[in-house]
Each structure stands twice: as C-alpha cells, then as structure tokens.
Image 1 (tube, rainbow over the protein chains, first blue to last red):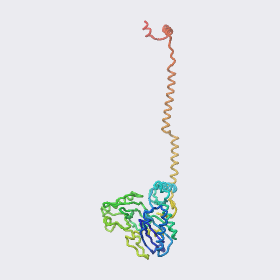
Image 2: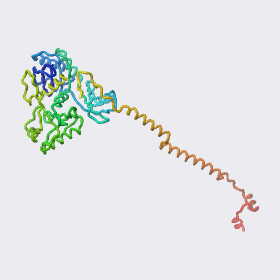
Image 3: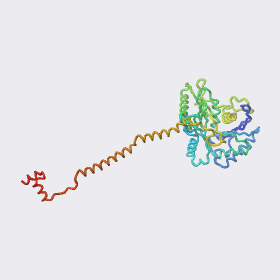
Length: 307
Length: 103
C-alpha cells in the first residue's frame, strides 16, 4: 500500500507491504509541497493537473510498485466539526438539518462543497454528536482523477484528525480516561481531545504566562475546559496527579519546553507521539522520535489498512 | 468510532443508531392532541368566557331598557286648563296644596 499525507505545506508518504496483520515499511519520505499547491485555490481546475504531477513523482520514486493508495488530508484541505443532533429524529431528518446548517455557513461556497457525517457515541439521552467533514468537491474529484491517471487505485481518504486519533488512542494507557494531542502551528497549538475511543473536541489553544487557554473549540467545550483547567492546575502545583495524557506531534520551541517539561515523580507531562514504536519489520531506517511523530498520519493510514 | 471514507458517498455513510425513543416521538403529538381536545371539551377558553359575559351583559341592558320604557310612561298628556279645573273641582286629584293656595 501507498500511504500519503498532505498537511501544513508538506507531503509525507510511505510504501509498505501488508503481511499477516502487520506491515513492512519499504519507503518513508517527506518533501515540501510545490509552491503552486501551498495555500492554493481549492476550486481551481488546475488542481487535478498539479496533484497528478506530484503523485506521479512519488509513484515513480517508489522502489516497489503498488496500486492501493490511502490518503490523509490536513485541516487546510478539509474541515472537521462536531455538532449536536437530536437522537430522537430519524437519519433523514438529521441529515437534512445538518445540510441546512452547513448551507447557511458556507453561503455561496455550498454549491461546491461536499459534506460527510459520522455519528459518535458522545451525547446524552436526547442528543448525540456527529463528526462532520466538509471538503470542496473539486479537491476530492481532483485527487481521484490524479490517482486514476497515475495508474493507482484510490482506496481510502480521511481527515488527519481521524488518522491521528487511530494512533493516539492505541497509545493511551489504560488508567487515563482523557488524552489531548497538540501540534504546534505558529504561535498557537492545534489540539484534539479524546476519551479512550471517542473524539470529544478539536480546538486551537494558546499558552500565555504559563497557562493554557482555548481560542476556539469545536465539540464538547466543557470537556476541553476541564482538561485545560486540570493541566493548568498541574503546571502550577506539579505534585498533583494529572488524569490526562498530553501527546505532542512535532516539537516545541525552547520557551514552551521550559514550561511544559515538568515532572511529577515518574509522571511526565508530555509524551511525544512515536508512531513507529514497536515496529520491528522495516527495510528503511526509522526516524528519531521527534521527526517520526510527523508521520503519525501515515501510520494511522496503515492501521486503517490492517483494519 | 467508525471512520469516514472521503472517496465514498457523501452524507451518513453508515446507518445511524435507530432513535431510542421513537415511539415517544409518535406518541407525544397524539397525547398533546388528545389533551387539547379534552381541554376544549371540558373547558372554555378565556376569550370565549369573556365574550359570553359581554353578550349576557348586552342582553341584560336591552332587557332593562325595554322593561324601563314599559314602566316609565313616555306618552304624557297634558291637561287643558279647563279640564284641570274640572278635575280639581270634582276632587279627583288629591292636590291639597293647590287648594290651600287657592284659598
């Protein structure tokens, strides 16, 4: 299989052989996106041509030919939301309601938008949360066409939120009920919040004067506030037991590390996501942990392939 | 949590869990309808009660007006001076003060 992740002006990809519920890594690469695909117009008819050129280069660079392609797209390519719906309504009624909500939000872009829904088990007796993904029709069509024209088979495509969650929830220890995955993005952090098997919220958070606060939240705001207030209490009094696992993708600058690298006995606050931990079969040299964490979506896609 | 494949069809890709309280959603309007009907049958709304009171009031006023007009004579006939003196003399009218004045 070929796993590709496009996010933050980077494209990362890996080629792996699937062998009896495990995979053998044959190739692991990353490269910056070509300038014409950075912050590009997602409705541009040129998109398919530019993507095909990029995919063709990747396919040509493979040491072992492969046809199955799995793709993960970052937040700059697809948008994710968590919305409440009435559990007592039928599927058709809920779908009509959600489409109406997005039609109001998207305005004139609605005609060019495609929207996907997935029910979660969050909610109470009367409401349930639905993960919704919106994307430009042109993006999905262009990727499909580009892969088809490159002689590969587009099998699976998902937002990076789901690829990350698949890896992180497997890493979460049995005793911690909540986890938070943060990824530095300029002066802010993109974060997603999970329970053991559920995505609870996505947020942009900031760190000011040694305190975390949310800039905006999609999903369960009370859950995010609870996690951040516990984290702030821990940063203030590090003898407290923190019932929250904090995962990091990438690396912090020194000023953030100073605040965050605090220890309480054997409890370390931040765990850098190591998607390759426990991987024994690899024909390529695996990157060190910090750089390896950037490939979390790639491993998430491979786990998806394994099922 | 089931995954979403963006290469697949849009909307809900897997069927949502059937509504847990589906029978309730059907029974709620029925119950409401029934209770409204029952309310309509047993009780009048406020507006209707006010309208009835006003109608009864108007009816009473009409009845009072006609009964008053029948009680108070409106066709008062004035005596001519001759007739008046004749009645006075015959003692049909008990107007003692007029007699005293005459005397």
